[in-house]
Length: 299
Image (cartoon, rainbow, N blue to C red; front, side, top):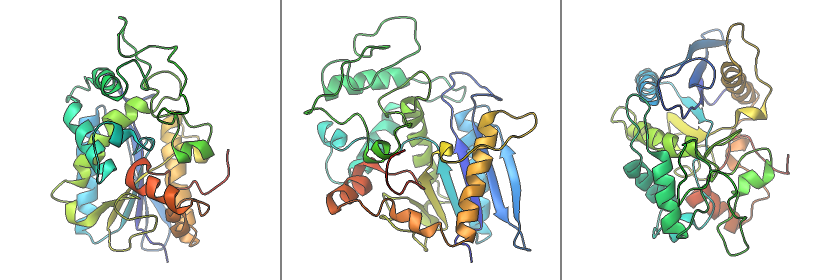
């Protein structure tokens, strides 16, 4: 019997203006119906991050009220390479303090205007006092603390360029990269505060957990809603008539999770890579996070 009743997957966007269609936010929900068939409940394309957060919150609150369990996958990093939080002066629950600080720093307005490049520049100054490790921006003017391109390479004494999970999936991009093809850094800066808002939504707070930070490297059967980091490129996108690739990616990934769950193959994925040693597991659960569905090897 599947662990979850529904699977929601989200393709995020860092557009600076309200936007729909290609390169915008898409999310879908697939659910098991009463006959045990997988059915699509929605394929939404909200124009702003604020609208997406509201729609997701409303949908999840409804499922919680119905007594359903939902897995939600977001396509951006939930964490930063080991040592980032400590270098910023945080100890204890590094991920929690990083999420709190990013949420305090990011000003993401209802019309999608945001200050993510200013935030990254400020973090660079605190981390190294130079334009490193965050890089890439779309502005016309040069920035002293944030290079468009040409940042220096990571040395042996620097924060790592990649998280442990990104070393295994080499086609992923580092969280430090804020702009250009495949970048995810801006998605993390604007997305983490939105996931945090969902986690603390009064309608969801008591029933929601973040994997693997709050669950450990396991499935938590007590949580009605589990929020996880996902990577749509793990599967081939569906081709949907009249819809962009983003829409096909979220649909394919949600179905992938559902089919794994149907075959009792989803639960083992919450353990991440079985080859992680104790120190690496601590890194993952305290600071770096993991992509649900990546188990081992490199690709």
